[in-house]
Length: 228
Image (tube, rainbow, N blue to C red; front, side):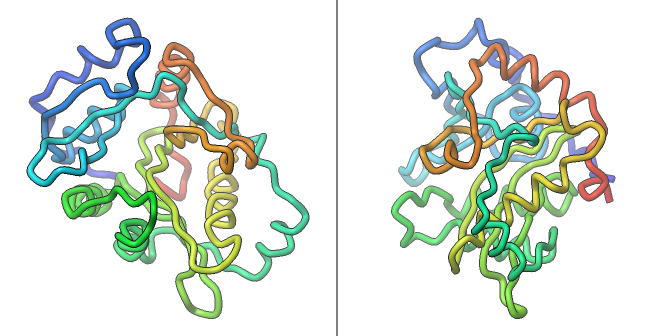
């Protein structure tokens, strides 16, 4: 079972109601910290952090106006991906730090993960809240993703691949792990949709729709794989 950290001193509930946010801005707050209790409080109210990109700045907190989610019964899996998946082994939480390190590779064009984020999610992982789903091939880590699991919510943070289709296989593995008898009520959050994610089945929800889905998901037990 995950360990509940000390509660956050920050009042995320004052931000978590859709009507309290600017209806046109994804960025909803600046400040607070990245302590485990703060991160969990934020996710429970629909927010997630990203660095500003300037050293020394406090965390920026986002709640997208249009939230990307992947319905667990709607991931589009091509024939080629199904064939490719046979060449990988999917593992959970055997290389969390390595997955985050790869996602944080500074040579990536869209890289945003800094040392503070790496440390914060490492702490969450050691408490049992943050998880990695990994694609292995011939004994090598070749792709994966990481995120935060709270009840029936999995909030995906980032993914990477070293060989073709490895990150898609990790995502397919995550969807498979979440597809139990409670799958229709579970919530796989990918933050923002992109053309690539949309091609895999990701759809967009309004803040109000996301908040309703989130309340339902948080009341569920986690999938067995994330409850050890």
